[in-house]
Image (cartoon, rainbow, N blue to C red):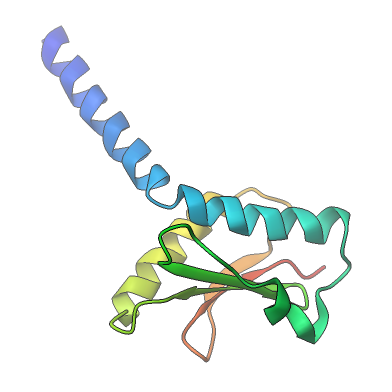
Amino acid sequence: MKKSLIIILSIAVSIIMSSCSTHADLYRHTDYFVEQLSTVYVSYGLAGLKYKRFTDDGKYGIFPTGRLINVRIESPYATTKDYENLRKDLERYYRGNPNVNKVYICQGGTIMIDCRN
């Protein structure tokens, strides 16, 4: 009984850790922008594209605009389901962060991390 419980817990932990680590590079970039908005910048203004970054694998593009952080899946084959799954992951990641008000899919189809006051 103890052995099976340990195996089940090990599997659950590895699943949770693998889902977190799949977006580690994305989180690193979005965390940078969220932190900058809480410590350095009041707003990135409309010229946020000059700050655009990409994850090391090129899968995501991240750029700030005003007090919003836009996250785009760079694949031309990204589906609504891909964006919804990413939104859920980012929402889960930023839950409890006082600098992030909301994570949502905007009209243009990309994801916004809302850091407005």
